[in-house]
Structures are given as structure tokens and as C-alpha cells.
Amino acid sequence: MASHPAERLGALKAFDDTKAGVKGLVDAGVTAVPSIFHHPPEPLPLDESPPDRHGQQQHFTIPVIDLAAGDRAGLVAQVKAAAETVGFFQVVNHGVPEAAMSDMLACVRRFHESPAEAKAPYYSRDPGRRVRYQSNFDLFQSPAASWRDTLFMETAPAPEEAPPECRAVALEYMRLVRELGRALLELLSEGLGLDPRFLEQECLDGHGLTVAGHYYPACPEPRLTMGTTRHSDPSFITVLLQDAVGGLQVLVDRLDEDGNKQPAAWVDVPAVPGALVVNVGDYLQLVSNDRFKSVEHRVVASGVGPRVSVACFLRTDTSTKVLTPMVTGDHGEARYKSTTVAELVKHYRAKGLDGTSSLQHLRV
Image 1 (cartoon, helix red, strand yellow):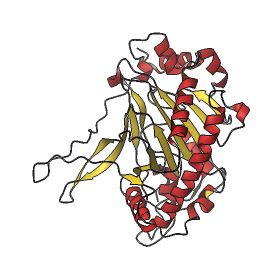
Image 2 (image 1 turned 60 degrees about the vertical axis):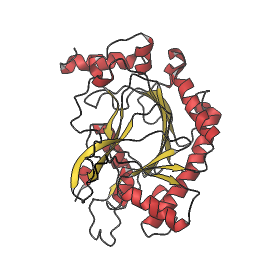
Image 3 (image 1 turned 90 degrees about the horizontal axis):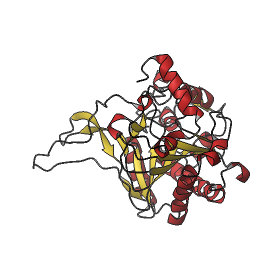
Image 4 (image 1 turned 180 degrees about the vertical axis):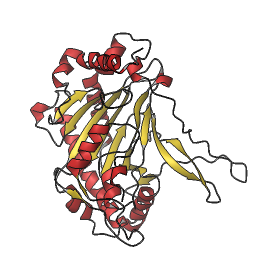
């Protein structure tokens, strides 16, 4: 077992040098999870809410919002309520065709299941590469590696930069998600009592979009590792496309029926046919001065798989962009120091997915 720091570093380098990722381990027939992937047990429970006074078991559910139903004010109210409480919601009738969604999942899966020698040229830890494939962006920073591989595509790469499996499909999907992202930012702006274009114009100031095509192979010992450890996102909002395998969980604060606070617990985000999952990111929590919540989430490892998902992170193109908390109403004092996107990204990459908030060091 590679418990000594030097032994662990050697094991990490040996794994990284294969450029084959977790999929390479599975293809090699591994039957035990290597020690570099071992995670300590999670102390927080799954959602087991106590029965109400009528004896009925109560479970928290992630809101599902129909973007084509009701009037504008009703939509704004639903999105605002979700962003202020759990920080997660699912959307249906969102304008992204189901064919585009299924094609995107299929192209990500095809890439990850292509021969290792075909993927190797894309394998890189250089954040300056607009298209790169890797296993665990924080492999050498995190306390333990996670059971997943990822294809990253930054801000509309040139077609020739993308893998052949994803060229036409990914660029079209990114365009569609940008359109949806703008519509969601308008609803969130109105939820803050601002002009509908505020968040797009003042925060995004460009077409910033990063796509992460995740591939979680079936795991021989899922209780020992994680698909993705608990974290919040370095984005304004994230739009997630997931397949039907499941495994995404959100950490929620719970109240009983009398309004008394209960211990936080992990809640499943089920796969809803045709839906996309939306969550508030750290940038929006900072800019909204805590009115909207960037909530921690994770993906549990599973003996079933592969699980495929596509996360689209909406964030600014401009690394020197200054993020400043909006001081309004009940949030009359800034709760964060102003910072640049570059500083936040640097902090996020340095610490990795270590289970701590990227915003904590900016608290006033």
C-alpha cells in the first residue's frame, strides 16, 4: 500500500504516465481499487429525514422547473427560490433538443472508449490547452484520486482541436447551452431585482464556457473510492447533462416541519428524462453576496457503469475580471473581499477538490 508520501507520489506518476486513465485500469482487468484512489469514509449521512407528525417519511427533492410553463414572474420566483435554498434545480423544456443531448453523451462515451493510443495525444495537464484529456485535474493535489476520466474543452475550440468523435456535436451543443445559460442568467438577474441582462453583461462579458465530459467506469470496490469528491463549482452557473446511471448527490441543510435545523445530508439528484441539472457556482454566490448558494456536491462510485456526464461551466473569458459582492437590502454589508477570476482559479487549482470551499479565504 503506497502510504508513504514518496511511494504515493511514485504511484501517482506511474498512473499518470500511462495516459490511459481509470479506463485503462479497468481495461487491464483490475479487480481491486489501487490505494491512491482510497477515500476515508464520509461522515455525513444520506437523506433519512425523520417522519412527520403523521408518520410519513419526508425526503428532500431537487426542484424540477418547466421553463415553458407559467408566466415570467412565476418562473423567476421558482428559479430564485431554488438558487436561494438548495442551489440546485433541474430544468425541462429548456430548448436544447433531446437529440443534441443524446449525441453529446454518445460522443463523450465514444472518445473515452476509443483505444488508449488514440486518446494519448490529448492527454495533458497544461491548463493552457483548450482541449485536453486527463484523469483527475487535481491528481497531485487532492488527498485521494477519484474514479473518473475527463475530456475538457474550453470556450469553443477550433474544430481541428477537438477529437474527431466530438467535433461537430460538441460545438453545436456548446452553442445551445450558451443560449440556455443566457436565459437562466436573465431569470437569476431578475431574481436579484436587477436588469435581466445584468449578470451576462457585468459578469460573463464574453462567451466563457468550459465543457467537462466525464467518464466514470464501473468500479470493482465502490465503497473504497469516489467518482468525484465533495466540491462546489468555479463558475457563475453550471449546466449538467447526465445519463441514467445516477450517482450525483447534493449536500443540503434540512429543516423539520417545525422549522428546526437538522444535520446536513446528501440527497440524490435523480436522472429526469429530458432534463438538465443547473447549479449556482462560487462566482455567483460571491457576486450575489450570499443571496444565491453554491452548494457542495459529489458523485459516488458505483459497480454499475460507465456513468457519462457533461458539465458546462459558464464563466467569464476575462481572467482579470474583478468579482465584487453586490450590497443590497438584507445583505447590506459585503461578505466577501473583491477578487479577480484569475485569483479564484489559481486558488481552486492549487487546492484541488479537497472538500473545502474556494470562497472561505475571501470571507470578510
